[in-house]
Image (cartoon, rainbow, N blue to C red; front, side, top):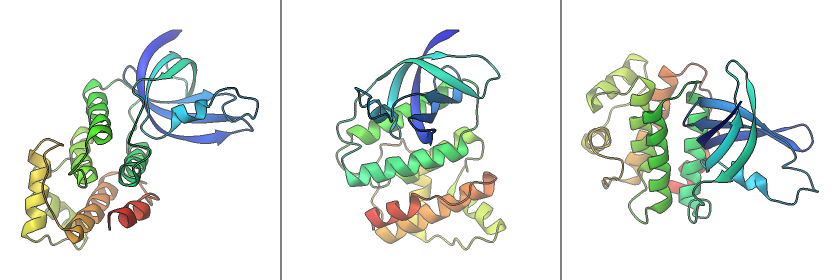
Length: 230
């Protein structure tokens, strides 16, 4: 049966010679995989592969049947064409990191409107913001953790959970202040922190996710993000 829904592209991988399988977090159905045929063919008259870059926002008509592992798209178009995110090295590095984290942490095959709207709002913020977004990824991960069920209530709780797992995280006053700021303030609220504090918090946040998400494994985009923000 055909259904209209909106979705957020998380990632894709090649399938056979000309096709891809795309992981999309949808407004109506949660996380699902979609087979898209012919997008890598030399005979393709459109550049539809561009529709499936990380964090692209889509309007879709999908074939949906409960219980299936792989679905198909009937129609697809970009809901909000990005003007900045793919072309700004800092923003695109953050987008790649966020999409990889979402690919490895989102498991829900059911609608969760609050999470979907949080993701859309966060992506649009990153696309449109002009300054003071260097801490976006830190604030985003802390807020996402709450949607995933393991968000800390304070910097002290965050520190305690890491220490229980023998992770050597001993935040100074600046790091503790930043953590509480990210936890309590809206995503777009800026705070100035040093590069070293930013790097320390990023590593601690990835470790925090590894504690709570089984099989999270290596985050391949992390090294690129570190280099860009250094």
